[in-house]
Structure formats: C-alpha cells, structure tokens
Length: 273
Length: 260
Image 1 (cartoon, rainbow over the protein chains, first blue to last red):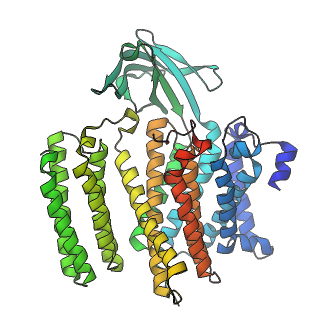
Image 2 (cartoon, chains in turn green, purple):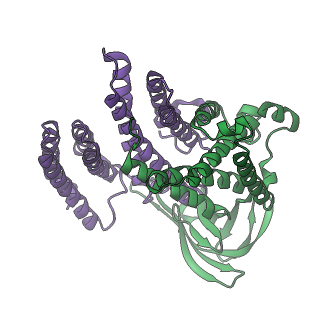
C-alpha cells in the first residue's frame, strides 16, 4: 500500500502539514483510533490491531526499514530509500505503530489498575504523544539564521531556502567571545548580545554554545562566526528556533523518562502461572 | 583536593566493593550492603572534594566523566542486588568500575584534556554514563543468551530466562533514559531534539529491536530460543550504534556523532 502511494502521489510532502492542517490531521487521527476501537467487535482485523501479536511484526518491519535508512545516505532531495522520512512505507509503518499504541492505550485505560498500568501508560502514552506531536508539529518548526554585527541591530533572518524573514525581535551584537585552550583548540564560543522585542523587552545577555537564550517563544543559539577573523570576529551568526509543539513533545518525553524509571525500579513484574 | 590523592580513595573504595562482591557470593547480604555503601561514600567524598576545589562540577573532562562511571556502576549494582539478589552483579559492577579507575590512574594526562564547546554541557555526563551502563547490562544479557543457546547442555530453566529478561528490562530502561537525555541535550545544543542523524537513527533501531524482544517474550505462544536470537541480533545492532557507524560510509560527513 505504501509503495502504491509512493508511485501514485509521490513522496510524503511534510511541508503541507503546517498549522492548522496538522491540528486537523491530529484530530482526525485520534478520531480514527477511537473508531477502530469502537468497531473492534465487528471487524476482526481491528481486534487484532489492539494486541501484542500486532505489535511484534510492526516493530520488526519498522526495524528493517530503519536499518535500511541507517545504511543508506539520507538527503532531503533523495529518492525513495535515500529519503526515508518521506517514503510512504516508512511513514505508514510508524503511523500503524501509533494506531496500535492508541488501541492498547484505550483498552488499558478502560480496565485501569493503578499498580499495573501506571508504568505501562507512562511508556506507551508517552511514546504515542511524543511520536505524533513531533511528527505533525515538525512543519511548524522554524529555524532561521541571523547574522548579527556590532553596533547594528538586526531584525531580518534567513530561512533554509535563504529567503529573508522579518522577525519580531531585533538583536545587536555587543561582543563575540572566542576562547581557546593552551593547545589552540576551541574552548568557548559565545556572543554578548542585546535583544529588543516588539513586545517591549530589552534584554542584555550572553548566548553560549549549549546555552541558548529564550525570548518570546524563540530559542537563540550560537551558530557561527567569521572564521577568517577568529576571536576578532565582528559578526556572530545566531540560529533562532521556534517550535510551538515543543511542550507537547516534552510532555511525551518526560512521561517516557518516568516510565523508564518505573521499568528499572519495578522490573519485570510479570509472574509465571 | 587534586588527582594526586585519587589513588588512596580509589584503592580504599575498590577494596570495599570487592569485599562486598565477595560477601554477595557467600550470601552474606549485610556485609555486601554495608561494604559497598561505605565504598561508595568514600568514592563520592573524593568527587565532592574535587567539586569544591575545582569550583565547578567535575563533569568536564573525560577523566572526570570516568570518575562518575566508576561511582555509578557499583551504585547501580547495589540497587540491582537489593532488588533481585543476583550473586554475580556486584562482582560485575566492581570489575567495570575498576576498569574505569585504572584508566584514570594510568592515563593521567587525560585529566587536563580539552573539551570542545559542543560537549560542555551538564547533559554530557549523564547521557554518556547512562548509555554506558545500559550497554554493560545489555552486554551481560547477550552473554547470557550466548551461554543458553550454545554452551548449556541441558535446556535453559525458567529462572535463567527470567534473569535474562530482567537484565534486558534494566538495560532497556537505561537506554531509554540515555536516549531521551540525549534528545533534551540536542535541543539545547543543536536546536532540535531529534534530527535523524545516523547515530540517532541507529539508536532508534537498537531501541526498537529490544522492544521486539520485550514484546515477543510476552506472547504466550512464543519460542524462547528464537527470543534469545532476537536478543543477540539486537546486541549486534547495538554495536553498530556504539562504534560501527564510525566506519559506515553513509554516516561519514553527515553525522555529528562520528568521533575521530
């Protein structure tokens, strides 16, 4: 089925999933999971989807396709196996796994038992939330590069296609900082910057590698500098990232973290009969 | 406090851990607990004093990271021991901790080694330590699977399968934590939590493969020996993820995880 889709409509066009399309798709997907669950007594296949027996071949198939992905060079312009993220069979198997997760989550929630099901739900619901929101929210992620210079507040940034985007925040570089170890290897890259926002904020701060600054839903990262000038660089390239779905993805991630801790603490509670 | 005095703390801790491991074999659990815990306290006091004298957490250099491995391994060992009473687990964790302590003692130059800015993060140590622990436990599970498949004459007992399962659960739990810590760190360092970098792709493969094992073992009609084969295959995939991708053509130049 995935191959037929790949042949007929071409690769998955993830860019089409921008808000509000992704919101509608998510609502539709959740509705579909509910319908599959409600019809499970009538359609034999739907009953099967909610079982462990369905999960195993789906996982094996996903492992297989992901191994191919790991062995081949992946590019955005790639075709079929070389652009696995837009390859229908790959996308559909993960969608199918999400459907299975949805079925088993509903089933367990309806027969909820505290001790048995809390770790189960943290793991499975956490994965479900993280998977679906990360995938559907990806089209709303904005990653822009801003070239800041000393004494010149900058409010324009470039997107991945090098198109100019006007930002709600302006950034002025105060000082670019580059420190090296005694052997000359880099120790620290950072930028002292002043941020002015349309919402009226005026912030002086430092952006380090690994220490982004967050302003009005944008995370600002140290990205690059004038490599010819090195420590004397008078420009600093910052990356600005906005991901409105991040809180949902993090909810899933934190649930899975808690689930993993439960898995370690309680271990395998299944007892032989 | 400097690295010069490390050897005294390390020797004292290792001796106490070894006594604990020996006591576990002899099923004297009181001694096993107290000795291991005192060893941990001594070792941690060194870390704490390093922390104070460096005026920063000792998480930056590889040597400092190994310090934490050496601490966490017996700690995890004693937790696993308290839970399942495996006689061998404390010996295993002491031996691994000893390896990292020896590296720190005999390769002292690494203490001052520089750390590139991208790795200077509080996420660095837990990400690596947790993964290393997961790899160690899953390695033990793979050894168990090899033994049950090829070396044991009589059929494997239910208890032996349970031990294997428990190791996989512990390993998978740590692997999940390591992977998610990696995702949270990636967001801080690279701006996105998951980018299908080759290392991430292989981490996902490995994780899914162990999920296959866990779910297959829960099928009432499964074949136990096939499950052991799944476990071995998963461990092969794990090797690919750990160091195999360093040699993988598809990862060259495209992975930020490929170490030289």
